[in-house]
Amino acid sequence: MEDFIIIPQAEHGIRPKELCPNATDVVRELQDAGFEGYIVGGSVRDLLLGKAPKDFDVATDATPEEVQGVFPRCRLIGRRFRLAHVRKAGSLIEVATFRGMAEPGDGNGSREGRILRDNVFGSVEEDALRRDFTINALFLDPVSGDIRDYVGGYRDLAERRLQLIGDPEVRYREDPVRLLRAARFVAKLGVEPDDDTADRMPEMARLLKDVPPARLFEEVCKLFLTGHGMRSMEALQRFGLSQTLFPGLRKGSGRGKVQLSTLLKNTLENTDQRVRQGKPVTPAFFFAALLWPPVWENSRKAVEAGDPEYVAIMNAAEHALSVQADRTSVPRRFSAVTRQIWVMQNRFTKTRGKRWKRLLHEQRFRAAYDFLLLRAEEDESLKPLCEFWTEAQKHVKPEPLDQQRKSSRRRRPRRRARRRPGTAGQA
Image (cartoon, rainbow, N blue to C red; front, side):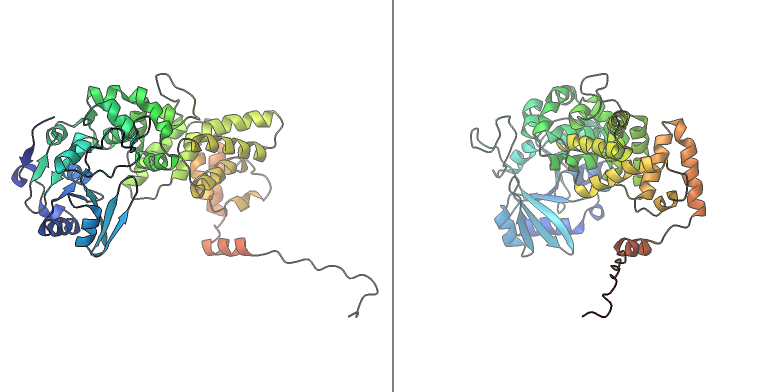
């Protein structure tokens, strides 16, 4: 903790043209209306690190209703965190009121210490103390150009240090997702947590079980689908968080760790490369690689016990996704694709006759084929199968997408009932 300091623009070096002009206008209008206003959080942090921010958020001492009074095109959202969304020149600027310190026993927290509602307003100083990490508690005034630092975040950022504000156990209990955010910042920003921030993480990992699965799904996407997935997994392993987040995987050596398959490692590296190249990525493929080991193992056991291949793989898939959904939800639009990728792995082995050609026209063929290639990097015995399907694509012309849609909608002709003798001409 440090005394409040001001870092002038000449020192921090963030130029006005690097800021979102709409966020600057929102701050200026708030100040003109007699309120405080700053650009805050990750955008200031990223600019100081030389990175392009994804979003520019604003914090103010105006209440959500007062913000709505300043901006006609404003909508209030949220229950746990009351926020104002301001429409400005086609963009959406999120405006939050400074948070204050809630009184003990006010009903805003759970028995475990997790904050359930957070609509106690306060001053800019209190708001700084309520933020998670010091590097996220920098307040930039785009009008004057100054940065206000109440918790030493500017120095921590310069020294690439990740430090929680306050008592780590209390802060992790307030919001266990901070555990995952810490791992993500280590992977994304190259910062290193101080001992107090890092030491409590393994024992606090169990708190993630109380976080809504839908929220954890969003965090998983941020961890693994934004260009630093491999480093994120290494951070989760290092801090003992992966076993709690992925309960269906085998335990690894070390507290809170899981066994990582070569398939998953290759998938994460491939996904990171696709992000760098600007190519699309999907949670469906990540979960297919993540959960394939238990799916494959359980389906093989079922086949040996006498189950048909399709039944075995579908039952194993259902079980793996169900176990994972208890921790992180997997929306149906993604889990359905994950299942298709798994089922097609068995269909790839059916290369005799002519029916295999149909597989080339399946909607998820390319994803399943890419998955097969990644499996072959771990299992050499799959190489001939990969070569077959690679050559097959050269000799069989893919069906156009619009034709696929038409054929999928086309109904089979109804078979006419054969007339019985002696009924011709009857009315």
